[in-house]
Length: 344
Image (tube, rainbow, N blue to C red; front, side, top):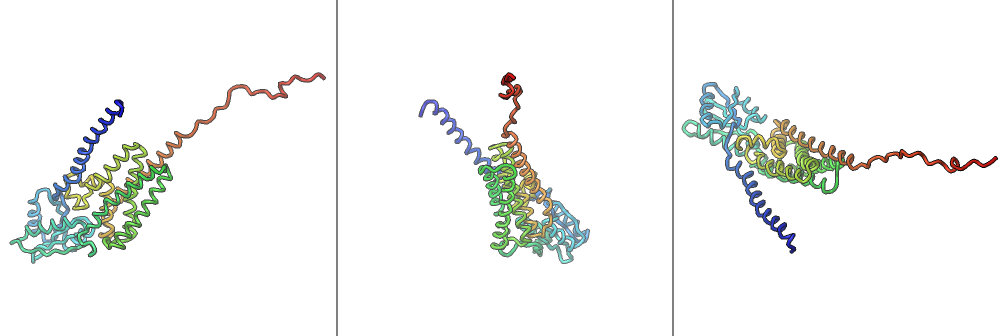
């Protein structure tokens, strides 16, 4: 090794030694910190029944300061409709025989268990509270683990599509077309696997395929769009937004309201969190509350595709050769014009 290359090799070794611990720390913080701080924060919960009894129950839940966001309903039917519409995660119905709990474990098994513990602890004499699971996941996936586990593969598929379109030399409209086509095929494959084969999803097949496709497209367009605008740093930024923070802050393992303040909300504005919530809505709740997440995914997809198309046009414009300027010199006279006239 020459004396000139030795300092460069030393700097590279030092950079690796410093970068790996920093990256490991960042990954551990991103995934472990939200999990370690899981607790209810303004968790939407319904209460239905006579005013006097419902007020007492609301005060009991209010002892957990900042934990629950109480919604009041006239009767059990209204409370059930709110649970099915994803307005609340569950509801307590006060009856003459005591409180009854309505849950939706398809919305979040963790929240359903948390509500059972909280309502049972507040019941008079510590008695058993009847529980009705209004929206339960399919029997093939009773804990809803398939939906949560499928979020990372969707982000990876989108990242692969966006990155591959660039490394294969696709630009502009061709890259956008490839991204849309790849996302559509990924959506069909995702629905076939999770719904038709595993039986883990129970909603409309085509709606599920559409959400799968839109999620992959949102991630893929983000990768391709940011790389078109920023180059290689754009790929790193896209990886942080989608694969890293997007999955860690999605709340799919529990619920966005159980994550630290602000983190759960941020996660719903990133493609994995929005895709997971949209898929949960169409798979278990007949599409209730899917509008917001679908809008978020659409914004990411449109913005990314626009960056890809406009970036491709800009590159073509910059690469186009300059028009050839016409010569300003006088035209060369033709031989016939320059030859002397012959004598008569």
